[in-house]
Amino acid sequence: NELPNDLAPFWMPFTDNRFFKEHPRMFVAAKDMHYTASAGHQVLDGTGGLWCVNAGHGREAIVEAIRHTAGQLDFAPTFQLGHPLAFEAASRLSLLMPEGLDRIFFTNSGSESVDSALKIALAYQKARGQGTRTRLIGRERGYHGTGFGGISVGGIVGNRRQFGTLLTGVDHLRHTHDPARNSYSRGQPQHGAELADDLERLVALHGAETIAAVIVEPVAGSTGVLIPPVGYLERLRQICDRHDILLIFDEVITGFGRIGCATAAERLGVTPDIITLAKGLTNAAVPMGAVAVRREVHDTILNSAAPGIELFHGYTYSGHPLAAAAAIATLGIYQSEGLFQRAVELEEYWADAIHSLRDARHVIDCRNIGLIGGIELEPRPSAPTKRAMEVFHRAFDSGLLIRVTGDIIALSPPLIIEKPQIDEIVEKLAAILPTVE
Ligand code: PMP
Image 1 (cartoon, protein in one colour):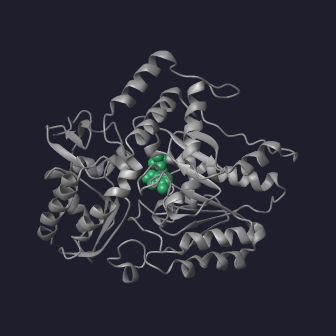
Image 2 (cartoon, helix red, strand yellow):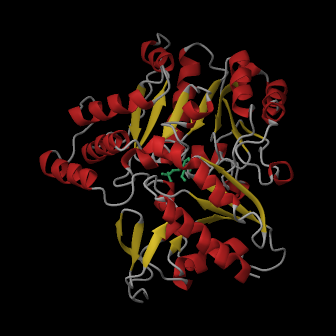
Image 3 (cartoon, rainbow, N blue to C red):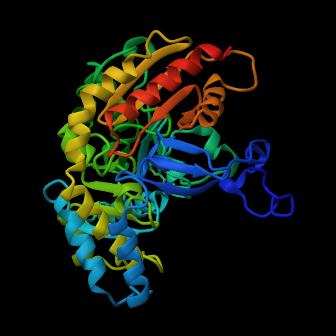
């Protein structure tokens, strides 16, 4: 399992290979619910790769679509030109979006989707004569990728501190996570509306006429599976409507069935103006992201008579043929296998499993929605390594891939998971937790 020393310096996973050097583990293959690590070790995928492999690994229909397209149309420029696969992918994707959000822009990642959405929001405000609306509002503990826009609106101070000014005119709503009130709640706790009123604080502070958009993850994933308390998103929508502010949902994780519907917007009954997507769009077989935009927002930018409003924005690989083909095949699998519905059917079983860990050593909270789960551990005050990271290592060695973020274990298995595999995940964690000091 060792990385040959002569290769070690070259690749920088996540720009930081110190961790990898200490624990050189590599994947060499993946099929259905499992990875194969380099020594032949089978690892149950409890995280869908990085919250993205919703249909399971190595799906033949996706592989075949990519293979066929690579031989047929390896690349097509999208500036002033098009190709049918991208139109078909956009049309299929639009059918999964909430009513009215049927204008699709393709990107290559979640970070690009976020930057694109922010630019679209600003262009829209300008196009409708509201050029003073340039402020953007994110949320503490929000994660929106690693682009300059995403780290600016993102609510992780450590991710942006070292980069200086970034986007100016950005504020952050207070985060919604309060372990004292959320502990062990099944489903959503109840105190959302009062938390969302924090947006009124920012409106009062700056004036509504300065604010372009609010961006939130409906369920914050990367910072620990933080499920919005009941009423939170509804109230954000009301306040945005009252002050004519755009609402953006970053659904890079929650999209494509993770919480039982095509979007969290659908599951939670709140429709934003813009949705950012990536990950599950192609089952992660090739990189692709997308932004779904409310028709009126798109058309306002397109038809604006104001000078200088054409939105110059696009990537060389927007709507890449291989990605478009993979997306079409992936959306086909989700539909033909009813995988979003499967997340609904398994939700109760999954909740029981996650919550069976509530009395395990160190656990201070368990939470779940759809097929996503978070298990929060009591922080260890002084030791350099977090408990959750020790659980990660032991889980990996026992054949289970989890994700850890701070003191939280995050789970988001492929939606094809079977009940015995859910049992396996919690049995492994139940065995490991008491062994961690
Ligand atoms: N937004 C959210 C909500 C995410 O979870 C992520 C990635 N985890 C991103 C944006 C960034 O996506 P990418 O890593 O593909 O750029």
